[in-house]
Structures are given as C-alpha cells and as structure tokens.
Length: 205
Image (cartoon, rainbow, N blue to C red; front, side, top):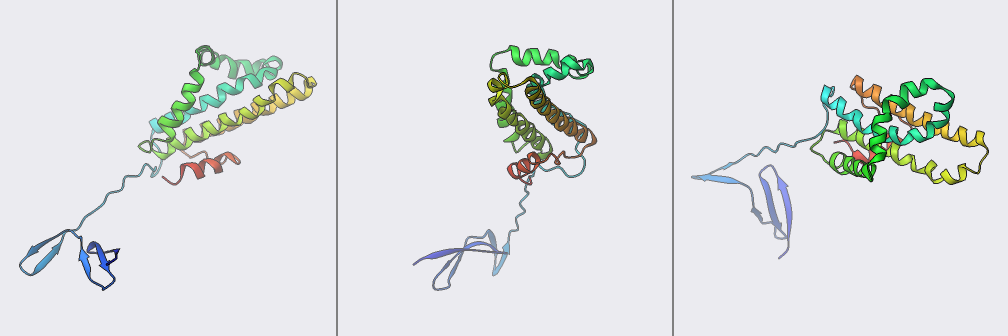
C-alpha cells in the first residue's frame, strides 16, 4: 500500500489510497475528546524593519574600504595634477593603504573574511550583508582594468590617463554614494548593475 503526505490544521498525516488517514499530529486524549496541541513557529529573519541602528550603519560602511583602497592606484594621475585629491583622499588613507599592501596576503584574507564571515552569515542583518556584498562586487570590478595594466604602458598617455581616471572616479562615486546613504540609514541600492546583482544574491532576508 502506498501513502502520501497530507497536511492540515490538525497537523501532518499519511493518506493511503484507500482514503484512511493515519494522523501524526500532536494530541492528548481526555475521554472521548481530542485536544489538538497548537504549535507556534517563530521564524527569525535577519531583515531590517525600519531604520538601522547607529552601529549597523557604521559596520555597513567598513567593507567599502576594500574597493576604495584597491582603487587608489588608478588615481595616480589625479594625485599628480590636483593636490586637493592628495589631501582629501590619499593622505587620510595612506596609513591604511600601507598596512593593507604591506602585509602579505592581507588583502585576500580581508576579502574572503568579509565574504564568508559577513555576507554568508545570516545571523547578521540584511542591511550589513547587503553593503558587504556590494563592496565585494565593486572590488571585483577592479579586476577588469587590472587585466589591461600591462597594455596600458604601451598606450598613449592620454588614453591610459583617461581610463585610469574613469575607473577611479567611478569607484569613488559609488563608495561616496554608499557611505552617504548608510549614514542616512538608507539602503544604497541605486548603483547601476551592481545593486541589481547584489539584490539577487542576497535575497529578501
């Protein structure tokens, strides 16, 4: 005889082809009465309801140091031409950059640490995980211009300079937007293409 699982208000049961239901529900018999024990299942979701707290906003900003530090190499032309960029961007980040690049494999350790310990950790709320994943996506984008690093040396200076400046401006604008939105307590989900990809990877929770 074959059985099929059925469910209902009384609980889970088995139904045979003859129509007999063998109940697997939790119940207690008191005389002829059957009292069904109701169960309540509490689902824990790591989703932000309302504005994130101050600590959540702070931790959501930290992963953006990854693409920001990795993009500094593309700002060399701007740093040479405009000292203001050195004062506003390069000098404040110089101590972090020296540590980030000075310790072997630290950049990889931080990258995979953010991915496995933050993005994949559903015990951390979605607001932080979303930003961590978006920072990783921005950092991965920097692999594309890095592939042309050798060819750039053979290109005319104005082409190499334009390409490097475009990469640096793009990352700086994306990180700046994300930081401002996080400070405001809003999800920075308007970065073209990147945010859409992050939405699909993180999901609703």
